[in-house]
Image (cartoon, rainbow, N blue to C red):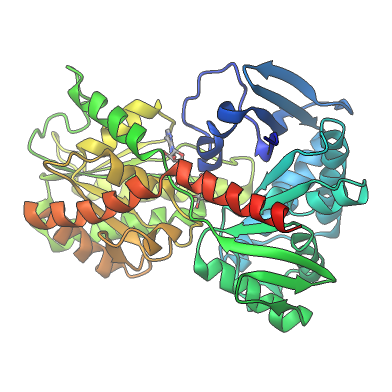
Length: 461
Ligand code: ADQ
């Protein structure tokens, strides 16, 4: 059996206890390598004066962790610059926040070239390489230039933007050309895939076959939809354990009968935190019976805090929380609890289980694993209600949620009011439908369906 080589921007330290503060990507691929063995390759998270030109290699069990440091210049240009100030905002439809420069684009290409050289030194002939996310779109092209013949797949965790948006990127064509060097490109949803195919048809004169094979730039590439999921059984188990601990997290202290609404997100402008807070404020004004009887817990650990756009959203969220608490709080009730930090996985899942409403309202999101975790964390006897943005990839699958438009403040407020008083029968019915889907399509099914498709490309080659 071929070895699996996973490439992702961050490789968590194999020694440190996973505290759940990393993004969904790290959580999703954590176990993938432990089963059959292989390499997890990427950035160490360290910035050093003169990075080595060999990866740091640690072997634990069947997995080899191979990490590379970045110089400050690489970090600024590749990571903060092109990846997180161009691709991230643009792919989340935030053209207004993009900050393109040729210097950052060149830095992005240089880091991809250097990573390809270092990865090449670790590869065996029959390794299967699975590259993750927008940081590494050109990696395959550089590996090919260096003579690598292995099968290489790419999975995009974030949305792919519609053609008209992508055209605003000065190097849009070369980026799509790089995508087409992969043997398999996986997207989260049909919407992302069809946006990509639309560009290929219109802008490159490429051909798209019914089986998802794209012929463009003189190459053939298989494309497909692989919605990422969670370890459903494990999430349910951990949440149940957290719930049965003698000392439950006391988030609604002082108001024992209060119902809890929960939001869990990295502190990111794509997650719709300001609109969500505004909708909650509207709920307190329009449904006065919610005052003193509802608490909104927003957990949002800081993320990419060296970027201006992230500092701004952090200040705006703090001020919006202060405004709501200032307007409504009483000596024994604070309407919003804002927790600006990470939590252990089990504690977080316990919070989700204790909450009557899961409020997941990104303005745009590739998938959103919190939505899936909220559902899996509920008790079958008395499940809570998921209020979910139609612009999260998860909305394509979680049909039992109350779907909302996060820009429609009154609509979200109405959905919250409905969720808070939804009868048990309806809550159970909605939850069952979603759990059925999550039990069937969990993280293992996701990984296997992707790797089987990549294997299929290999067999056909
Ligand atoms: P993210 O944007 O990071 O991921 P998401 O899918 O919600 O978003 O994953 C976040 C993960 O971090 C969840 O598993 C959550 O439980 C965990 N987490 C968040 N806050 C936490 C906290 N305070 N403490 C502990 N854990 C916390 C990107 C894309 C998504 C896509 C994923 C996976 O933006 O759209 O779903 O990758 O493909």
